Image (cartoon, rainbow, N blue to C red; front, top):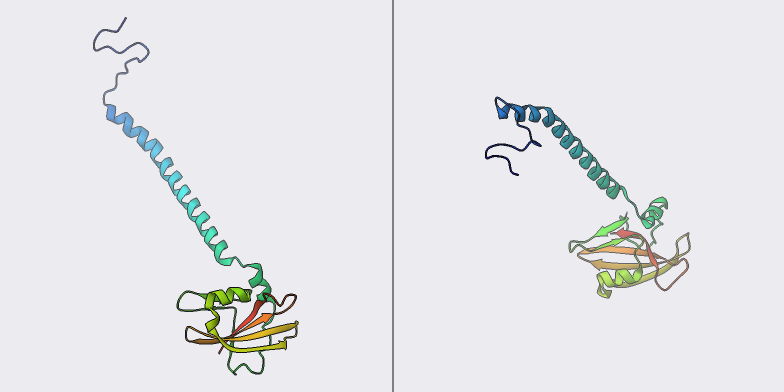
Length: 163
């Protein structure tokens, strides 16, 4: 049986309210500040989370760089021009870069064999034998020291000197 027209079923009793807008405004006044504070706390937490991720990324050091940083730069050979500067990383204008720890095959693939100026020297660097190769690439002249510790097949860059 349906209720007569205009009447509400008994499950939903009618409540007399002089002005429906007053109740809605009161509820908004009670809940509004909690929502605003919740949004502010959420934003602050997100900003801290992103900030710590960025700081962690910038402070991250690979094991090769950490080992290279602990070791003092090897003494340059006498054939290296005076005023040469030791660098941990050397970047070029085309976006390529050479880092301490890169392998000889990586350098050859990155710069090409045409970058080598042909001089190579083998000497004792104090920590074992090292191979010094001289390069010219992107208008820069530099020398790479390759450590020949265990393997002569694919040695790693031990130092970079820009001159």
